[in-house]
Length: 485
Image 1 (cartoon, rainbow, N blue to C red):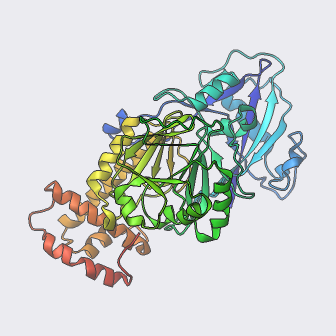
Image 2 (image 1 turned 135 degrees about the vertical axis):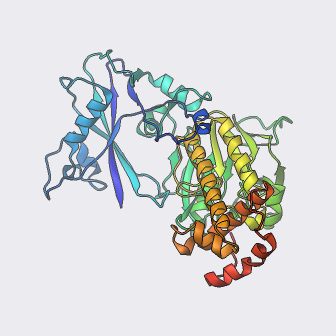
Image 3 (image 1 turned 120 degrees about the vertical axis):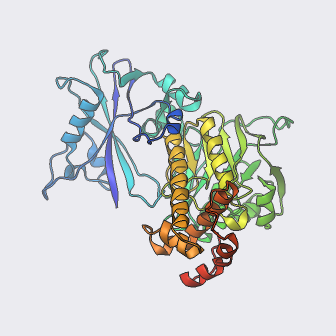
């Protein structure tokens, strides 16, 4: 299942591009969250394509649209209404007319588990200049667009992913290394290629995002002591299922030999492809936190330990290493300096909340502190290893803070109402959640209880000894083995 949208690339006689200010998600209620507001995001105007209500097909509204008939037959959608909505969105007078031409069809990669959003790009050119635009719309030259995509200033105007996708050929942003056929990817922000690959991850996801940064330029081989590692390309979290290892082999073979491999943490859905890289490129160097490295145990090539604060140089691009404990005690994030985008591993996911691994040093206090660290960076975009790229990173991170605080309040309320065992606490605080998810959720519950205890917030009559002794009984009641990541 998928939904479809129409994105309109509108150019004036000066060949400038029309972009519009995007509406952010609704703000969260709370004084603290007002301090974290994403900067303005401008993108190509787009609207959802609605199927016709009757079983009939209209004539072609867009010139050349038959070129994408194998992907979508636009005659079965209300294209005219969608175009009217676009014109209204940018603030044009109805008297302005266009000849709309089909430009490209872009299928969204399988980030899952939400519906795919596939995009039809159309091109409309104005015959004369239109200077009187509403405040939300503006003309922007292509060189300026390219600069804003490749060199992002913190807390400054941002250009969105539809621009990067719709004008990828003209902007020369598309990755130059060859990806295997039929393997979908998204390049956004500029220079950061995200490839969702099937993995043995936890539901509701079925893929882990492989992140590849492979600049066109090859820098000097001279080592600079200011950088903890230098390479011509870097791969992050090669955790694909063994069924996808042949595809991973093709990706590695297409990359330069001076390859860096970074894993954000040790879970198998992030490291299962390391054996492929060792086989394909014996010159590759692994980068990981020492707590992660001691749990991997299957890497025999070069290794560079990370602890946070280091800088990695990939050709002419720089990546800042951020120690990000919480999910595990060896979790690492990366800030891509040029685009000021943040690769966060499993600290956040595309849907729902992240499960912290209590068996590998997961810690709720650390998780909160890492989230604040990310918020202070004010990234342009947030790239997690499961789910879509998020273009409202501060809103997302605040949402995670609020969710964890609300959940902790629910857990405390359950304890204050008489819950004494892990089963009682989980069943009361997760009463609105499918019981099949209670076992993984219990890891977060245990960490929340520890966090409450460290703040002396637990009721005086609550026995930590009895609570801890009830954990095996919880597993028995749930009829499953102890939770493992």
